[in-house]
Length: 108
Image 1: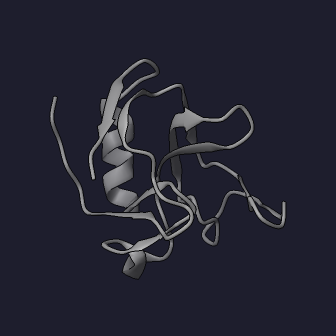
Image 2: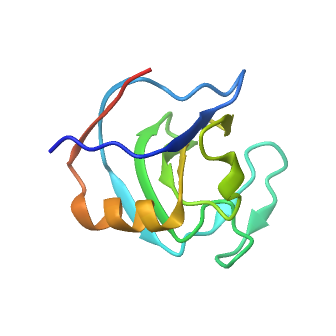
């Protein structure tokens, strides 16, 4: 399957990794921990991950993946901490099409 969506990518200093990866974790209504302050944001309308999380990269501590966003105007820009930010309706659709083990190719 080959599919593309409008996305936001990592901003300078937090670039999104490119290459071939595998989905290793999926969550509906995820919480989020700020990678700089360690502040925890629970699931809900103000959560920066939106309502889906699809992880495809980790360094063992931090993870990068596809997720929704309450900040729709950021899609189409370099705005994230390395993740691939999507419209909530798009990440919900993608979530239903992938599973753990699905190969993901991120291209520049």
